Length: 169
Image (tube, rainbow, N blue to C red; front, side, top):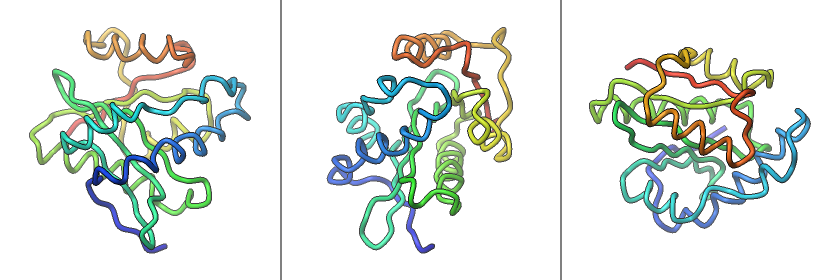
């Protein structure tokens, strides 16, 4: 599979919500209600990430096929969203996008990359663990992490079914 990873351009943003929605449909088979995934990351959030150099895309033949975006917090970056079109999954694109976030976090001087994910979905948590992320004990949650976990919970992503992971740079 030939693809290019790069920082997103402003014109790329319009393609990302549909990629996110198509990717999210895979979670429905794991007992999550479709309504949880009806909304995609807002265009405003994506624009802020793009302006801050925290939005990356995977492009193949001039078509955006995946993306990742991060947010700065006090002690690192949070990988807030990563999605690949289902037709392009299982080809290393997701791993490459995560590694792109890690590389850019290192380059920017961050010490940690955080993310939240589902504990029990067989292809979710193990994916990040294989890359090198480790579960962060809830006793070590910072105010920023607590805010993110609670925000996701209000969106319908049950915090009891999720785990916070950290990658030490």
